[in-house]
Length: 272
Image 1 (cartoon, helix red, strand yellow):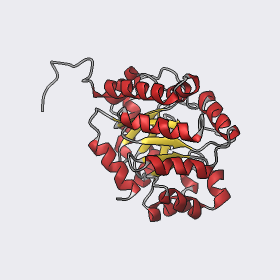
Image 2: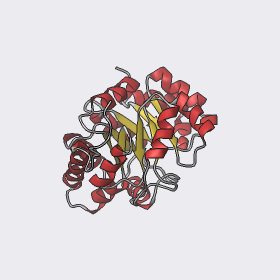
Image 3: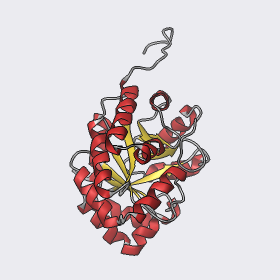
């Protein structure tokens, strides 16, 4: 099974209203604990994992994830070390690596993609590679069976959305709010999700600003095929005496929120 097929199977086989995809920072608070956090997420009901590779200038990340990346680097985390974490987790769930293009360029795109594939990664998220500059990376990922996951935002115009959606692999990462990652209340995402779904044939996942079971349930009700939660879980890993246990508890709550039926239904709605 290729990474692209592994992602598709995870979305199709999710036993909740939307697939759950927790984010964890590789190497935070250390490499072994980050692996145990990933295992705890899967045990608690995660369908996929987003695994961050720490980087010195993470333009898409808010203060919580930036701080975790800085701490991971200070503790000695390396790209190779995070790939080892990926290799340990990948047999249990699809792992999508979140990284920045400088890390790829430092090794060479084809070499990095080959190493990621050998580590069992299912795909890559590289937020600082725009559509117009993505062909080389997308071709390398296609050759290795990895999904190059595209990102779209509320500000993405329809014509650009159509171009991105046509080339999307794995799923489309839909940013719920403008700005960087972080815990904050978002609004109704149903219109944004509908726009993205019209542009693509792959699942559509919603991220940024989702931190509670209620947020996750609302995202599913708005039409998200997947829900991505990051900063809340990374903050828990930073604050807890036992990070894996605490993150696992939060992921279980998120999974329960997605497994529950919608809180409100319209009994007068037409059927068929």
